[in-house]
Length: 240
Image (cartoon, rainbow, N blue to C red; front, side, top):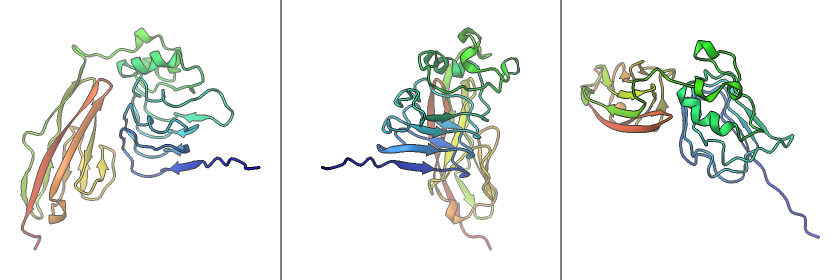
């Protein structure tokens, strides 16, 4: 008699400077994904579309402010004792950005609780217990991000400072993620020597070298959508 064997795969990316999870980031066959204690700021709504078998997902202790409406819809949490979804210790903003997710949450009875961090009036409250009409933003008009890179440094002598602009127009505010020519993703709380993202979304290279030449992409995302733009940087000469 042949016995079927179930192979379960685990992925753990704890304590890594991860800031963004894109579409279809995880593939079929995964059982557990651990993403705790990173600097994760943005999860694409289709991040788990190709990994419906995940039963254990840890997202605690990150920098997440909101969740897209259907981000967990591909996953099948039915109350099995092995199922875990941990969302604690993120700066969740229970405002308009969580409205669509909160509506979906009403029909997803086995999804674990999420506690609001902001606004102050909802601090500590369980999102599921907050009436949807209280999830609002102070915006004259709700808009998805639109990026302008005007004023960016495009050519810089080696050893000089380069500033790559990512001016974002939208409401509510967007999370900004930069991708370097080497594929590194950076956000405002990334800790990388010599390169940083400022509060206004600009990428700042303190002392440019030839290794910094290349194409940089800025992505801005809020719950209404995302935009991205590219800046080409050329570093001339060498540091003497």
